[in-house]
Picture 1: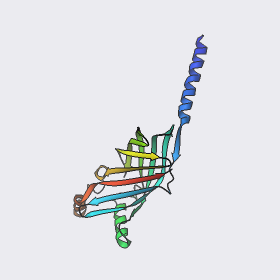
Picture 2 (picture 1 turned 90 degrees about the horizontal axis):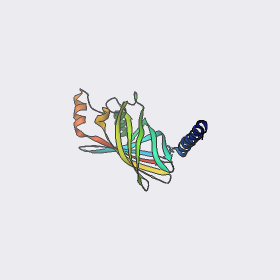
Picture 3 (picture 1 turned 135 degrees about the horizontal axis):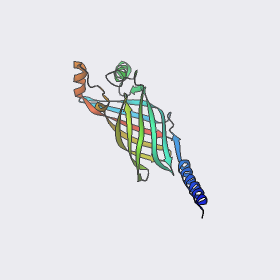
Picture 4 (picture 1 turned 30 degrees about the vertical axis):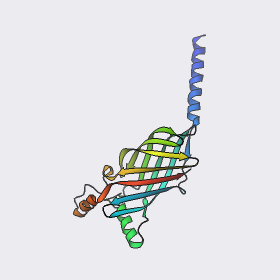
Length: 191
């Protein structure tokens, strides 16, 4: 076989392989209006919980298996659910302030899935990069995907994102001691 023919066969085979690989991976959009994010923050004297809205989200699927994804959260949408009226408004205002999430400067939080390990039967070990308040840190968590829905629970250490720390205020320093360093996020996605 001459060199040109061998090269042509190699080129066609390689192009076909890469084309099939690219075509088989697909981006699946998350239905943000039917998805939910529930947060829980604990302190010595109890806890607060609420919701926050997903702005956008996509899962990358290849042959029916999760291989990646990315999500954007609307930090301005944070709401307290355990309080009502003025108490809820005060907590929400505090959470949106500079000492917490500083939503005026950082209106979005992002999660990009960087590594996905299939455990079988719709369960995955996921690693990703979480960006909150302009700081990006690695995270890992379990992820469950079945039919047209997915769910996960994340534990986030607020200190990694400079949330309610580093201030010279005595009140903030007292708050910093009585509020747990970790907060929970429970995510339910509809595809």
